[in-house]
Length: 627
Image (cartoon, rainbow, N blue to C red; front, side, top):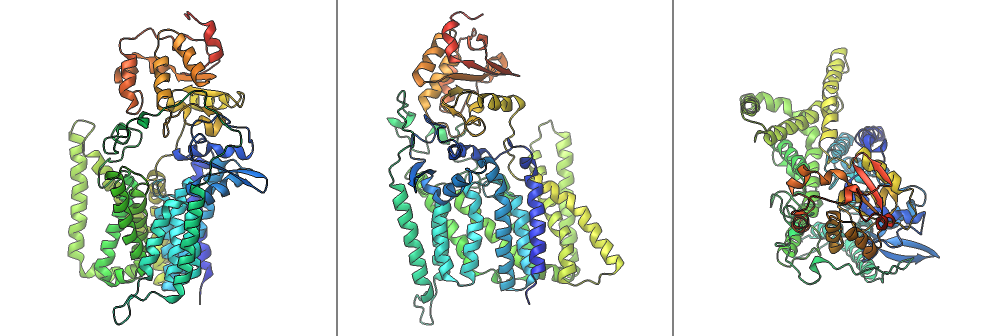
């Protein structure tokens, strides 16, 4: 008989963990994942007149406008369902808060499906194990796959979990529906879902003839067809803005005339805004893992998986359902295909390779650990007694390695080259301690230890000692959120008081958050910079020695206000020669060379907070010789 009390317990624990991880963002609206800033345009759901001359998304085909029952909707073709849900949701609540609260919907959904899957595959305790392992590791993940971001990619793991659930239970109509949902929510996940489904349906009869389940063919083809139709229709739709925009001046791009291969494009190299080959092929957008956090989680899964395999043998791998292994194969194939497109064809048509592999590795890892953990814990004491000598050697080696690294770190000049290794070892041990410490719960449930006073207090002590380590692990590991300075927050609040049709230009790092928080237009920004020549014109005018270039810049691009940080004129800052991403930085260095009497810091500001200053372009003509 199924025990739904354990499901309720897993949901409660999961929600508490999610609240702990998300709390800093919930009490501070400015604490967001960086890419959330891309969805500033959802503000038009409440104020349709905003961003009527936008130069970031609306001049291209990043957004399309759809007239639905007399209402105007802005949608993203490659995330049609996601943009529809969140654009409509933004009519009631600001997108910033919608993205932060999404985790409290996605986590219970995932935990419920995983618990039910554990029940289906074995029993209630396995369901609890699978769901709690998922909750811990997904909350300790980088923003690249974490559910806490609320971005489209936050739906990748939940969609894969639901798809695997129905594939494992051989319920094929929901599988077909999930393919369509994948296409609507986050189109890059569709190839991964399709391949996973195909590998799950490949069956051979006794004559070794391909014989997929007949009940699966129609739902699969229907789901695939609907996904293809939706993709074809919305990628071919004509972009037509609600308030038509005519550029004030042409905004040519560096690559309008010369198309550089990605391998040679400075934007995708070290120093560029989107480096592709950080530590290839391990880390980076073209690596198997997007960030070090992704890799750390997989290393933990590998360590735990090694322990499990030593205790349970091949049965540990055989317990993992076939569709999960299909997902791993699909992830590796899509990784290779995407890498081929980037390296050989200089195309991101298949998006970024790490987007496929990181999800596949994560899913396989927590399935191996979660499905086997209860049996592993039950058999671990007997295995430890049998292999006590080996384990003593492992413990001795680990402690010796840690002490050696700490001593070497103390003796060598700082910063020591051993610091990354010490941090990695510390995080791995913290993760292992958390996992094994909280296993006291499974010992009580799975082994049915008698609830005498001694066992109760011993279990409670283990849990209490482990909880601070796990809590710190959850707060330490995920990618830090954006946390603007007091001056940057004050800037956003000031710009929000300006008329809705203003156009702001300035230091790119100051511009990035303005569209989202101040709901005002910027000419360019640090995040995914576009309008290349406008950026170069700005820096040339910024480091001019008279106000005329600034005035000409404002007139050329229809800029009404300029914002900058006065520290960017200090001798120390200028000496670093690190003004912006490549390929801009090389040109900016030439603008600054030989100049000292900059006019920008001498202009009369209409706003000042700390080192951040705003100047009105309308006043530039009155300041021919500022003192």
